[in-house]
Amino acid sequence: MAKKILYVQTSGPDAPERLYPPFVLANTARAMGLEATVYFLGKGILAVRKGEPQKIQLGDFPPLKDVIDQAIAAGVQVMICSQSAKLWGTEASPDDFEQPSKIVGAATLNDLALEYDAVLTF
Image (cartoon, rainbow, N blue to C red; front, side, top):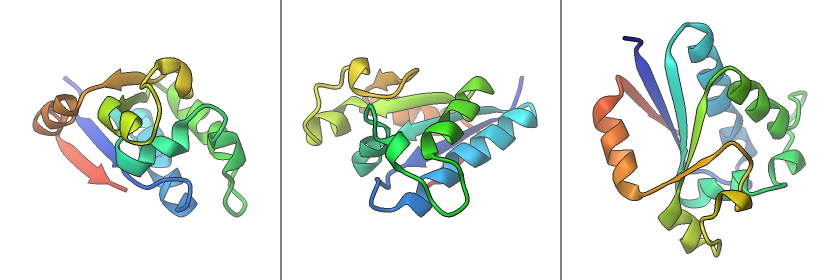
């Protein structure tokens, strides 16, 4: 069974320097044969609302949308906290977010943290 790494993204579009690392690291984890999931919580969900990643670009890096697409193509899972979505005024519908994203409850984060081999927070 492959090792698993969970990346918890709590930073939003106002901190673009914190949005790239989870996807770069998750993509690298997949290249190493590891399972990788990025879980968006709190303000982090604002960075993956439909249309938002295309607006975010930092330095010489490509737009965040391109980095996300590359990670997803490599098999990285993206999860969105439904309670955080409601906190920021969305209905927590998959249509509100970049796809593929899975809308999950708060208990999912606790379950993942207990199940995964490593948890990193951004």
